[in-house]
Length: 205
Image (cartoon, rainbow, N blue to C red):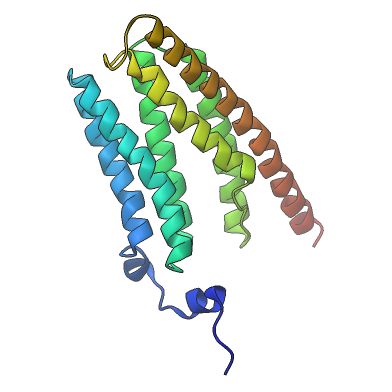
């Protein structure tokens, strides 16, 4: 008998909400939401260094859950949903705190959320018709850039760096944020093209 491939092994694994939610990658995605809320509470209550460090730990789980899902053959539809949700929570909370601390202009949050609303609406339409829009390379890089930018943006505010170093680190973070927003709209165009293709196919079927 030929050995099973990773795809076959994953497909044969028992599935269901309560089964899938207990997988290690999905538990990590859920923990990212909880860690984000704890980090935000600490940061807003004056424990900014601790909040930033814990928030950075939440970002690390974004790398781990995808790696473990592939390594352990535990990729699930629920995992894809939880991964996007936890990224959205982490990015939105961090952006909101940056605005509250006047570290970024309000336009950044508007630009970010507008793209997310458009992509979420497109994904919902496609999902309701039994299709899916997979994450793109640019979409993943957008997440990496946006999450990475917060380390530089918050570092000086949290007192982890000072003087000229604080300005340089902040500017690096700011530049990464701009790059992340640009990547988000470029990936959004890819998602919309997939949405249009599926819409046209369904409209003409």
